[in-house]
Image (tube, rainbow, N blue to C red):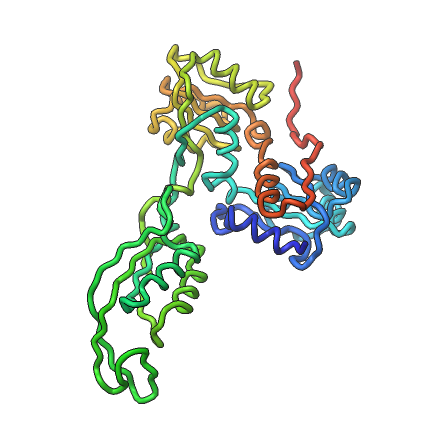
Length: 365
């Protein structure tokens, strides 16, 4: 299939608009019109990964971490980033990355961690703001259902665990067409009164273009009246980290044993034990120290993440058990997200989980 079909599935699940400003998610090398035979799924894209793709005859690599974070001024093979890009291009291999956009969705990286730990009733630890908008439009009563259905189909009306949400208010509108108008109802040149429904729906900001297009296609009027406003509401399904509940509370030693086994973590750097039971757990794949205050505020007794600095461990202030299990360890199962997405949408497409361990950190025992 064409690369653009695969990208469509990935970006429907994890829109590029959800990546952080410093990130470089998306298509790194390749052309969207390429025919893809099979994909190699990995956490990092390195020279070894490209070699594995060549060996397994995969012409697409889907990685969590982008091989290129900032612009390259020269590509002459002086470092591993340049050598990886050169080798991929020479062998006609596309590289695609879904990084912080995959971190920021509810069914992304943190969901996998939560499932490995057996957490339930999970929710976003730190939801994001200014990602939601509200659309108001005014529709003749007879066609209100048709317009609502079009808006829902385009992605409007989702709130938390509910879809097809709207608020509707009956009223009437007036209008008078000029000489070159073509009114759906009434007569041009004469003011007309029409019974209408005011329809309000929430929409993700990145879907605005498609939703407005759907509105114009479904609306019967020659001139469509609508308003769109940016909301300050938190987006319940988008943000950093997750927090959830253990089915059975456990002591701190047993909890660390669970984490070590479930997450295949050889080493866990943690704060002192507080002699409390662990029942609520906050998680964040990758570097999550910035979420410590949110983890404490959530009522979690433990916070699983990576890349805490020495002095940041003091910030726990005996309120929470910080468990730094390593960056690779928190994100090593990310490839499974890619595999599941592709298998659901393309059951016969060949997806291979990389066998290469890309963790740059080694442990001496």
